[in-house]
Amino acid sequence: MKQVTEYKDYRLFIQEYYEDRKQKSAFTWRDFAAQAGFSSPVYLKDVSTGKKNLSAAAAERVASATGLTDHDADYFCALVAFAGAKTDDDKKKAFDNMQNIANALKVKILGADEFAYFDSWKNPVLREVAPAMPGAKPLEIAHACKPKITAAEVTETLQFLTKAGLLQKDENGNYRQTDKILSSGKGEMVPLAIRNMHRQMGTFALESLENDPINERKFTGLTLGVSESAYGEILEELDQCRKRIAAIASRPQEVEKVFRVNMQVFALTKNLNERGSNR
Image (cartoon, rainbow, N blue to C red; front, side, top):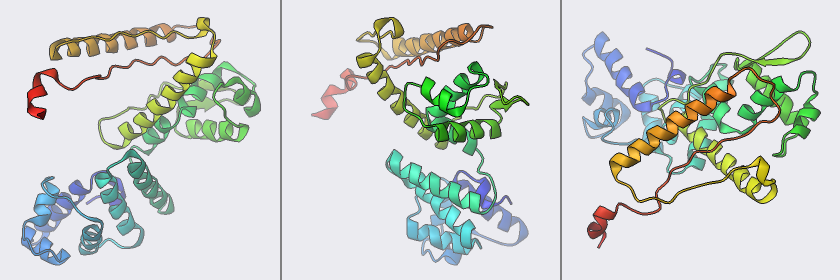
């Protein structure tokens, strides 16, 4: 079976470990549970299907039962911590731990580039800025950005973007965008980073509202009462609008400024048809 560092879901690791052992011997869920020291013969089966969760102590027992040691065992435990984390901060700490372990093992976590890209505003901004400033030094690029960023951070970000294949650097030291686009995905890891990105961009939006001249910003909004079906139509309309804006920006042109376009829809009330159930 695959190395544990190739997994992003500890439940799948448990399921595939069981299936691998079962193919090679008369291995049962009861055997697996006993091997890990659990009294319930179906406990790990329930964990694999999402009916039960692993605690930190239970994760260590499963890691030992599956033969994981050292960094591999630590990675599995971090994977369990990530899945069980209640807050984004805790999830971020668990993911950073996973990434540090993977780096120590000299392996790459699937989706790590996507996570790193969406985790910081510096990446999408500098991916636009660097190609528009041929010959610019990191300090010049830093000064061109409104959010504060150092020359060292510019250098580090450009190195990541180049390594991830999102920018290419020519023999003259100039950057150009590649056709590669990182997917935001549907798993837990990348959406966590995207939420962080939205927080950062939301902060910049508030700063722009206070500090930027009106010709450099546009804030507008509606407060609406709608049905679920109308809400779905609104989301589709926003998605199509985003695509049309992206198409406009992708036309051949000289980039003069980098803008952020935020599109937000969020509820200001609970479901009004369920008001009686909260009494």
